[in-house]
Amino acid sequence: MRHLFVIDPIERLDPEKDTTIAFLREADRRGHELAVCTIDTLELGADGRPRAEAIPARTVDPISGEPWYEIGAGRAAFLDEFDVVWMRKDPPFDMAFFYATHLLSMVAKSTLVVNDPLSLRDANEKLFALRFPAVCPPARVSRRIAELLAFQEEMGGEMIVKPLDGAGGEGIFHLKAGDRNTSAILEVATGHESRYIMAQRYLPEIRQGDKRVILVEGEALGAVLRVPAEGESRANFHVGGQPAATEVDDRDREIAAAIGPELVRLGIVFAGIDVIGGWLTEVNVTSPTGLREIADLGGPRLEVDVLDAVENRRNAG
Image (cartoon, rainbow, N blue to C red):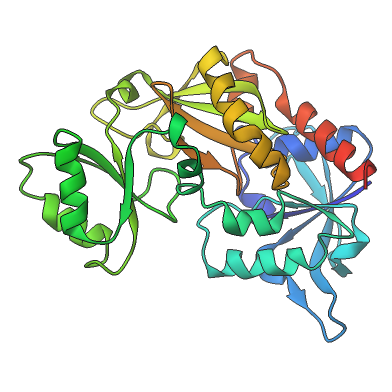
């Protein structure tokens, strides 16, 4: 099979931690033909066929500080020349990302796009979880400060607020009753009531960690615990959270059973859900991470399962 990975510049990928590299290595190990491109080279020509500057690539074992990859000369290639296109551009989900998914949608009938580009647009990582209220903590989505403050009071004085388009813990605040900065923080977070944000009930179990559970074709196959730094309410690796070994438990499987069929229906082959204290807080579908940490802590190499799923979908037509 021929695979094209839409990624950040390849030299920026972390060879120790990046999940995309795990996919590249596994696809290469299976003998697939690989190419990479960056989102800025995606375009639509006069012929109506999406294309990109595709750079041939293969993975190698680094020696003496040499790169983990070898690349060839790039060329303009039509996306429908590939069997599989992987959308692995890291967030934020900005307008460039949004329009790129539209270009990818134009080849989705002839080429398998992982994850489905229409679903990448529709399945907002903060809002998607709210489709399953039975497994989510209480939440409110609003841009009105009075409404958000009322929700905080309903929750006993504590809440978490987060932007709908953020990633890596950016823009997340833990607000407590009596904090004189609360209104000012909400003004900034909502852009003076011009932007919607999400407020969630604060879950004190965050002190024990935020569990990232990896779902492949809707099934929970592995997990890693992200433990926040001292004094932090955010466990994201980008803000100092540390990985710890954990297992998929019955509650994780219950959540997966609730949301998995919808993920499969939407063409979301691979997702990462965030679970705190047994509650689903986010569903990550754009460029989920965590596979490397799971393997490093003695868990399964889930890239094998993801490649199996991708091959099965492609072979099924």
